[in-house]
Length: 360
Ligand code: SF4
Image 1 (spheres, rainbow, N blue to C red):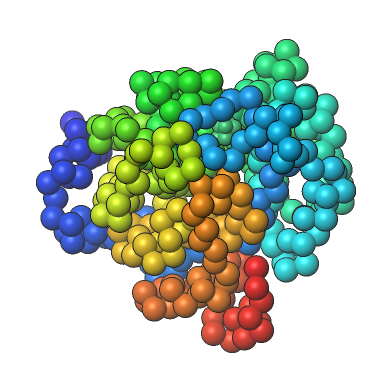
Image 2: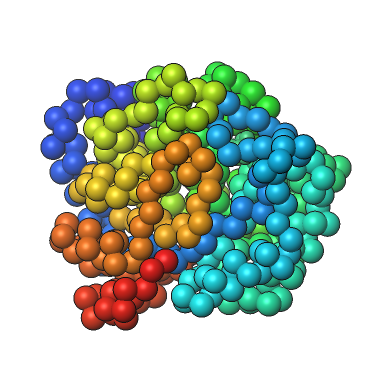
């Protein structure tokens, strides 16, 4: 008999466990998983570069996309993209997340060319870019297989895939909130294809989109099953849907307790994924701080210039000084990491990023 948490166990724990006992259990597991880093929380210095907001997918939960004819639609030029990367390089950042809408005018050669230009100029920058819906879009638009496309992008300089577009990996929910987006099987197929060629990825779950609690854990189970098969996920990133300014504005946003319980259950459930993120983009920095006591060990990125959540009217920004303060006040040391979650440097009170108030 397996001693792993099942979906059923998680539903039971989520619905009935004492809130503080749940935190204690998740923290216990976190300390076991991160034996050598029990009092450490990490973050990555990254920048989002949204290369286009033109998107044919029209997800009902998205306030960001535009149609091509819209007066505020855009596709950044390569020079504009390079300028933004230069901004990250100047502050010592290490990761770029190129992400955009599913723009029918952009084919495989555009992406390959862009990656080559960026990698050629900034070989030190890790390109953690293009989520599965973009990979699917490139494959379909170019008449190529997913395997072919991922390999071509990897050869052009793509290092790693973010887990965007995962939302809830249950098609009953996906057809309601984003009927034109890839289904759960395709999302998993793309992640499997990346893992197969040695490309690591993350798994993101946007929850609070009308799923039952059971479906939330069924979605997590699909990620855990694939991880058993490939070992390619570096982290699991749960974050609550922010409904304002979207077609789903009638939905109620998951509250703080649901968020913290979801993070804690994720820590209990994922015995095969090392890192669980504490988010702050939709949750706010204070709730992100509390998530550290519920099993989370990583703040994710600084996300310089995040645009997609911002379009819903939620503007939570952070900087290294703030991350330092909330980590220190919660009893943790703050470390900057790379995309592979290797710790690069300790950010203490005397670090120039704190003393010189470097604003990201
Ligand atoms: S969430 Fe992404 S795929 Fe969906 S409409 Fe917005 S930009 Fe397009």
